[in-house]
Length: 299
Image (cartoon, rainbow, N blue to C red; front, side):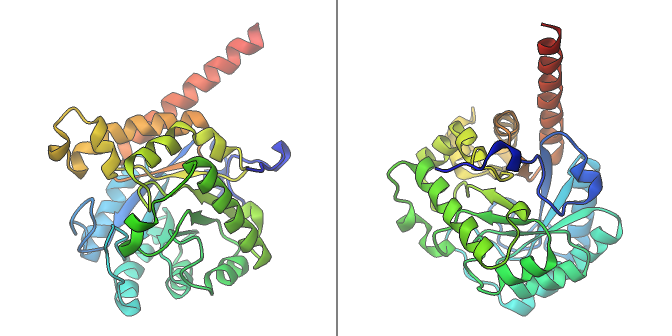
């Protein structure tokens, strides 16, 4: 994997709101699923009024960014019609943005991203990294907003068959690097690109654990890194309950543990379903880093 030179690395992507760009710590992105079939919350926030209330609660619990999505990406999920996705997300994005909260739109469709940006979103999070919709790269290039490009090998209904790697960390890093090159060739500013290893997306549990163990190698690619391990199935292996009883909500504490690993490895942001544990965790990591720096100055 070829890393960018140290002077190209930055804590935050260019285009982030100033109040977030000034924070010298890992950020926390709270998930707002406006879907009836999410693996993590089963449609609990499907109605706009409920999703908006959930967003306010996540922000109160320390989420720096709210990631609003209207299409499930769980394994085996079918596509949501465009008009239905727009209907789900736009009222939520607008209400949260109007309240002064930084909002990310979680979509693979350029048309949805464009409409959400017009409603006040400040970041586009695309699990396909711009591969699902050829118009996405041009849209984010013109909008000049941060763009999260996740490692993606195909649609949700093909995840299992696509989970074949030699060295998963090297393979994911190389594929992300090629995605960045393609985005830059399409006009996207490299300094706007955030990378996401895609935990659980065409990854079996050993792949996800390996990615978590070697996050520093992905951080070394030189782009801000978004880590989304929250409630993923592989975390069930680390829960004290029997694995078959460790459902999504029982994985929140181990999610916070992975936040510590991610923040300590230099991740830009963690994407989580419960904000408070991870919001506390990133602050603890930042405090330890500051204390370590102070001790080094005294030595």
